[in-house]
Image (cartoon, rainbow, N blue to C red; front, side, top):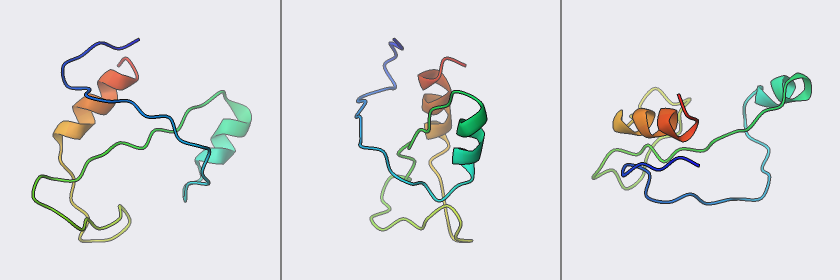
Length: 70
């Protein structure tokens, strides 16, 4: 289990059909899909990742990498 001060909480959700082609990879290779909270501070209504106005809190990328042990 990852122990890091940057990871505040881990929640398990029911399976959801993400809008990615990831499921095709998962059919061939054991896989796990992470949803990472990455909304920058002060943004109340973030844009989805396929929108040209999408913005990300880049610190979330480090948390994600630590979550999977990279």
